[in-house]
Image (cartoon, rainbow, N blue to C red; front, top):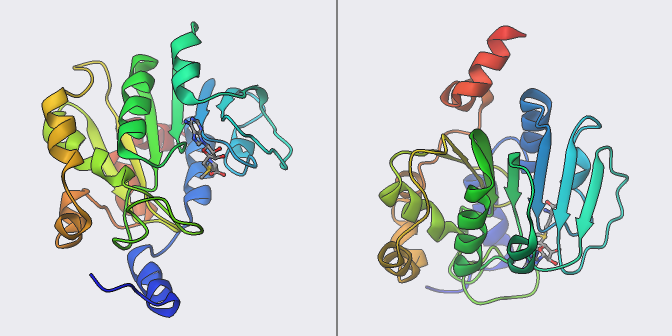
Length: 236
Ligand SMILES: C[S@@+](CC[C@H](N)C(=O)[O-])C[C@H]1O[C@@H](n2cnc3c(N)ncnc32)[C@H](O)[C@@H]1O
């Protein structure tokens, strides 16, 4: 595939990720879901961690955090990789987990599998960077806009875990996948992990909306697909 110019990339970004920004969607989820316990993998400057509400107990994990935002929630930061964190953490389950750490398929698979162990039936996991834009920005690490091959976990889960409710929102700047209905099965087999590791950008690009189960980025369309949220909204 030919390398896209900056102008072509920007045009493709506007087309591929219309509507609400991922931070606005996360803010809405915190507001309506009101998680008692929130875990974020990959916190950087705290843009998304700062959305956790004052009533929430939050944990942020990052080997190199550089928090510049004031945090509303009572927050504990673990300065370490998610692998180290999950190997040490002993504690209660989380209601909401946001995975936004190392943007590599194997790392995100591990983050998901470990996160799932810390979920209750009613928990939600959100994974960032799940809609790739181009072969270059979803391949080997590059400076600047880079989403890696995080996206591969979505078709792997859609294939192997029909027990889960999985939707992907085409939000700026790189898509967000929401995963719900835990507790009926667990994890991913080595065969499935291997099968989707081999997939490439051209494969997903020819039918990215179907392969990633993309729902239009419009709250009136995706909120009803989240049972707990729909009932919460009806009750308020
Ligand atoms: C895209 S940033 C996170 C942005 C943040 N969640 C937000 O939305 O504002 C990714 C972060 O993941 C961190 N990271 C890299 N490798 C990691 C790992 N193995 N475990 C946890 N975090 C990691 C990086 O240090 C970086 O701060």
